[in-house]
Amino acid sequence: MSKKREQLLNVAEQLFYDYGFHGVGLKQIIQEANVATMTLYNHFSSKDKLVEESIRHREERYWAYMGKVDQHTDIPFVTLAEQHGHFLKDVSPQGCMFLRAIEVYAETNPEIAQIARDHKAKLLRFFEELGESIGIKEHKDFSYQFLLILEGATSMTQITDSEQATAHAITMTKRLLETYH
Image: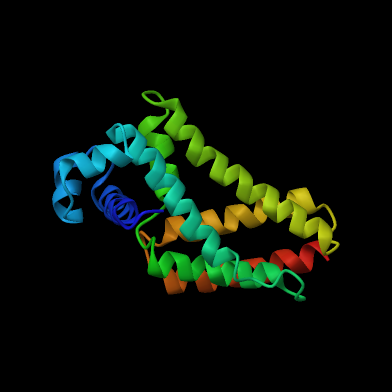
Protein backbone atom coordinates (compact mmCIF):
# COMPACT_ATOMS: atom_id res chain seq x y z
CA MET A 1 0.00 0.00 0.00
CA SER A 2 1.34 3.40 -0.92
CA LYS A 3 2.23 5.83 1.83
CA LYS A 4 -0.38 8.37 0.66
CA ARG A 5 -3.14 5.73 0.53
CA GLU A 6 -2.23 4.57 4.04
CA GLN A 7 -2.23 8.18 5.23
CA LEU A 8 -5.68 8.78 3.72
CA LEU A 9 -7.08 5.61 5.25
CA ASN A 10 -5.69 6.40 8.69
CA VAL A 11 -7.10 9.91 8.67
CA ALA A 12 -10.45 8.93 7.16
CA GLU A 13 -10.93 6.02 9.55
CA GLN A 14 -10.26 8.20 12.57
CA LEU A 15 -12.46 11.06 11.36
CA PHE A 16 -15.33 8.70 10.47
CA TYR A 17 -15.02 7.13 13.91
CA ASP A 18 -14.85 10.45 15.76
CA TYR A 19 -17.49 12.40 13.81
CA GLY A 20 -19.58 9.84 11.96
CA PHE A 21 -19.65 8.83 8.33
CA HIS A 22 -21.89 11.72 7.32
CA GLY A 23 -20.23 14.22 9.67
CA VAL A 24 -17.01 14.28 7.66
CA GLY A 25 -16.52 15.52 4.12
CA LEU A 26 -13.81 14.70 1.64
CA LYS A 27 -12.48 18.23 1.92
CA GLN A 28 -11.75 17.72 5.64
CA ILE A 29 -10.08 14.36 4.97
CA ILE A 30 -7.92 15.86 2.23
CA GLN A 31 -6.94 18.75 4.47
CA GLU A 32 -6.12 16.64 7.55
CA ALA A 33 -4.27 14.03 5.49
CA ASN A 34 -2.35 16.85 3.85
CA VAL A 35 -2.79 15.50 0.34
CA ALA A 36 -4.00 16.92 -2.95
CA THR A 37 -7.56 16.35 -4.08
CA MET A 38 -6.32 14.32 -7.04
CA THR A 39 -4.36 12.07 -4.67
CA LEU A 40 -7.59 11.11 -2.92
CA TYR A 41 -9.37 10.45 -6.21
CA ASN A 42 -6.42 8.46 -7.56
CA HIS A 43 -6.92 6.05 -4.66
CA PHE A 44 -10.68 6.22 -4.07
CA SER A 45 -13.31 6.91 -6.71
CA SER A 46 -15.88 8.22 -4.21
CA LYS A 47 -16.55 8.87 -0.56
CA ASP A 48 -18.42 5.56 -0.36
CA LYS A 49 -15.33 3.72 -1.64
CA LEU A 50 -13.26 5.52 0.98
CA VAL A 51 -15.76 4.48 3.67
CA GLU A 52 -15.60 0.85 2.46
CA GLU A 53 -11.82 0.82 2.56
CA SER A 54 -11.76 2.57 5.94
CA ILE A 55 -13.94 -0.18 7.39
CA ARG A 56 -11.69 -2.85 5.86
CA HIS A 57 -8.67 -0.99 7.26
CA ARG A 58 -10.28 -1.00 10.70
CA GLU A 59 -10.85 -4.73 10.38
CA GLU A 60 -7.16 -5.31 9.55
CA ARG A 61 -6.20 -3.35 12.64
CA TYR A 62 -8.60 -5.40 14.76
CA TRP A 63 -7.21 -8.70 13.49
CA ALA A 64 -3.69 -7.47 14.19
CA TYR A 65 -4.66 -7.37 17.87
CA MET A 66 -6.48 -10.70 17.85
CA GLY A 67 -3.70 -12.34 15.84
CA LYS A 68 -1.31 -11.86 18.76
CA VAL A 69 -3.09 -14.67 20.63
CA ASP A 70 -1.42 -18.06 20.80
CA GLN A 71 -4.33 -20.35 19.98
CA HIS A 72 -2.52 -23.32 21.48
CA THR A 73 -2.57 -22.04 25.04
CA ASP A 74 -4.94 -23.42 27.66
CA ILE A 75 -6.98 -20.23 27.72
CA PRO A 76 -6.99 -18.58 24.29
CA PHE A 77 -10.44 -17.09 24.84
CA VAL A 78 -9.36 -15.22 27.96
CA THR A 79 -6.41 -13.88 26.01
CA LEU A 80 -8.73 -12.94 23.14
CA ALA A 81 -10.89 -10.98 25.59
CA GLU A 82 -7.74 -9.23 26.83
CA GLN A 83 -6.65 -8.38 23.29
CA HIS A 84 -10.13 -7.13 22.45
CA GLY A 85 -9.79 -4.87 25.49
CA HIS A 86 -6.44 -3.56 24.26
CA PHE A 87 -8.07 -2.75 20.92
CA LEU A 88 -10.87 -0.91 22.71
CA LYS A 89 -8.42 1.10 24.77
CA ASP A 90 -6.04 1.91 21.92
CA VAL A 91 -8.37 2.27 18.94
CA SER A 92 -12.05 2.06 19.77
CA PRO A 93 -12.87 3.62 23.15
CA GLN A 94 -16.27 4.97 22.09
CA GLY A 95 -18.05 1.98 20.64
CA CYS A 96 -18.00 -0.08 17.49
CA MET A 97 -17.34 1.44 14.07
CA PHE A 98 -18.65 -1.72 12.39
CA LEU A 99 -22.04 -1.51 14.09
CA ARG A 100 -22.21 2.20 13.30
CA ALA A 101 -21.63 1.39 9.63
CA ILE A 102 -24.46 -1.14 9.66
CA GLU A 103 -26.77 1.37 11.32
CA VAL A 104 -25.91 4.23 8.97
CA TYR A 105 -25.75 2.33 5.68
CA ALA A 106 -28.23 -0.55 6.04
CA GLU A 107 -30.84 1.20 3.91
CA THR A 108 -28.76 3.57 1.79
CA ASN A 109 -25.69 1.51 0.89
CA PRO A 110 -26.11 -2.20 1.67
CA GLU A 111 -22.62 -2.96 0.32
CA ILE A 112 -20.98 -0.91 3.06
CA ALA A 113 -23.25 -2.43 5.71
CA GLN A 114 -22.38 -5.90 4.41
CA ILE A 115 -18.64 -5.30 4.85
CA ALA A 116 -19.29 -4.61 8.52
CA ARG A 117 -21.63 -7.60 8.87
CA ASP A 118 -19.04 -9.83 7.20
CA HIS A 119 -16.49 -8.75 9.81
CA LYS A 120 -18.80 -9.86 12.63
CA ALA A 121 -19.58 -13.16 10.85
CA LYS A 122 -15.87 -13.81 10.29
CA LEU A 123 -15.22 -13.19 13.97
CA LEU A 124 -17.94 -15.64 14.98
CA ARG A 125 -16.56 -18.31 12.61
CA PHE A 126 -13.07 -17.78 14.02
CA PHE A 127 -14.36 -18.34 17.56
CA GLU A 128 -16.33 -21.42 16.48
CA GLU A 129 -13.31 -22.98 14.80
CA LEU A 130 -11.07 -22.19 17.75
CA GLY A 131 -13.62 -23.54 20.21
CA GLU A 132 -13.95 -26.76 18.26
CA SER A 133 -10.17 -27.15 17.95
CA ILE A 134 -9.64 -26.96 21.72
CA GLY A 135 -12.56 -29.26 22.50
CA ILE A 136 -15.21 -26.93 23.84
CA LYS A 137 -18.53 -28.70 24.10
CA GLU A 138 -21.21 -27.01 22.03
CA HIS A 139 -18.58 -24.73 20.53
CA LYS A 140 -21.12 -22.88 18.36
CA ASP A 141 -23.24 -21.83 21.35
CA PHE A 142 -20.11 -20.99 23.31
CA SER A 143 -18.77 -18.85 20.46
CA TYR A 144 -22.00 -16.92 20.09
CA GLN A 145 -22.04 -16.17 23.81
CA PHE A 146 -18.36 -15.20 23.76
CA LEU A 147 -19.00 -12.78 20.91
CA LEU A 148 -21.87 -11.29 22.92
CA ILE A 149 -19.45 -10.76 25.82
CA LEU A 150 -17.04 -8.89 23.55
CA GLU A 151 -19.83 -6.86 21.98
CA GLY A 152 -21.10 -6.00 25.44
CA ALA A 153 -17.64 -4.88 26.52
CA THR A 154 -17.45 -2.70 23.41
CA SER A 155 -20.79 -1.09 24.22
CA MET A 156 -19.87 -0.58 27.86
CA THR A 157 -16.88 1.57 26.89
CA GLN A 158 -19.41 4.32 26.25
CA ILE A 159 -20.61 4.07 29.85
CA THR A 160 -17.48 3.13 31.78
CA ASP A 161 -13.96 2.85 30.44
CA SER A 162 -12.30 0.15 28.37
CA GLU A 163 -10.28 -1.24 31.29
CA GLN A 164 -13.34 -1.79 33.46
CA ALA A 165 -15.35 -3.22 30.55
CA THR A 166 -12.46 -5.54 29.69
CA ALA A 167 -12.08 -6.73 33.29
CA HIS A 168 -15.75 -7.71 33.33
CA ALA A 169 -15.46 -9.38 29.93
CA ILE A 170 -12.54 -11.47 31.19
CA THR A 171 -14.47 -12.51 34.30
CA MET A 172 -17.50 -13.44 32.21
CA THR A 173 -15.31 -15.37 29.74
CA LYS A 174 -13.80 -17.43 32.56
CA ARG A 175 -17.28 -18.25 33.85
CA LEU A 176 -18.44 -19.15 30.35
CA LEU A 177 -15.46 -21.46 29.91
CA GLU A 178 -16.31 -23.20 33.20
CA THR A 179 -19.82 -23.82 31.91
CA TYR A 180 -18.67 -25.36 28.63
CA HIS A 181 -15.70 -27.42 29.84
